Image 1 (spheres, one colour):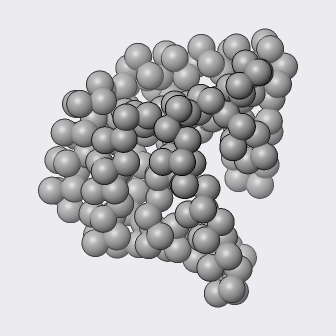
Image 2 (cartoon, rainbow, N blue to C red):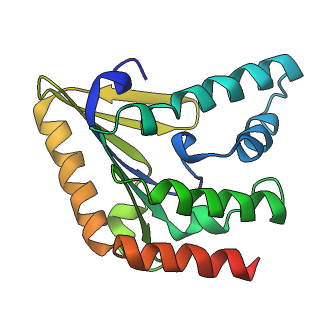
Length: 180
């Protein structure tokens, strides 16, 4: 996260959850509040507040490009109940309309080999340094090694090619919201 504010480009792929930069307060509270071991209310509020502050980057730095590829499962994993998910999906549409943000959906059954390997974030700084961040339960890793970053960038590119276009993704998000 220390590199993220310096980024001129941020590309990510998320498998099961809406990424923090796109989460509503309700969704973030439900997600963080369900942590195990349980967190006290003050810690939950502190983490939600920090997550929401990070979102300011989406509108503060309009020259930074944000691309989010979300697996369909992230839209259908019900966090916080139906109303929370409906508001979350509407927020995706609103944020996705920003000119420096693109949101694409990877439909079920597409990109299975690569898509099942997990979430990733690719960052590029103004000095054109490139980093890749991968996360799994109880562990995370930031990579700066060129061969690792390149391999993860290629994997992201292949996933992105399998994803719906930005426009088709917005239609898909609307459809899922209506199904709730």
